[in-house]
Image: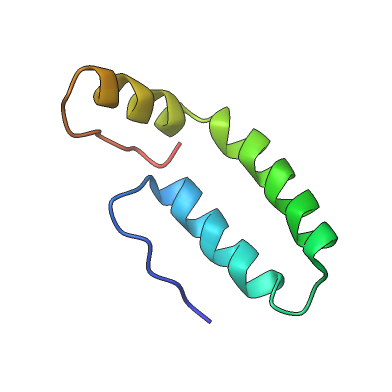
Length: 66
């Protein structure tokens, strides 16, 4: 299964798509645990910082996949 997530950083979009596919048959508790771990991983990336900076500077982000 592939989920298209447009406009976001590649790392976050890939991880979101993977989590959707993995959690189709899991419990809500297991899915939320995986989501919490993924959030911590993604928020530490260069792209996350770029997205925040771009938002406050009112410009389009330049994601690099890192």
